[in-house]
Image 1 (cartoon, rainbow, N blue to C red):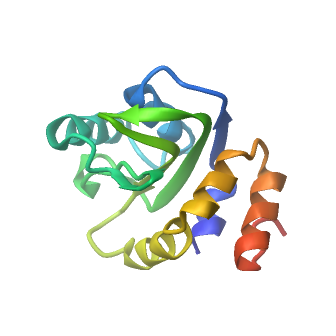
Image 2: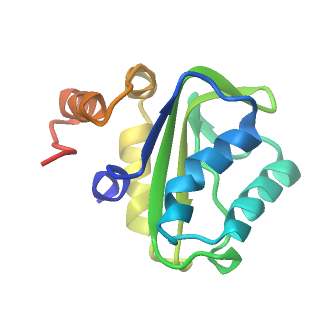
Length: 150
């Protein structure tokens, strides 16, 4: 499920100025496709400012999100992969996965996928080295034996 949602929404950068810029850039594919409204990005940033680095769930993996009533039009996921670390209040991340839940329940299976795939720091670090969808697909296939691109 997660790779079907992500595959057309992956961005690659060498580095980025700060965590706010990382969240904005990571969310851009969802904004462009009108999955989210600009206020959802503002809400994610506000949550990070309020609760500090709560979104860094694992070494080098951040998952900014906010409540669906802040401008989510439908379920969506996007991924920013940065070669250099992004500093989230002292916690480093290479991957920024934006989840836009359309309600409080629509993303439960998606969160199970997040735990399944992004709970492995070795996988995260290998993804951080990628710079194309084909390299992401190769990494996912290597670690989990599934195809991202058909």
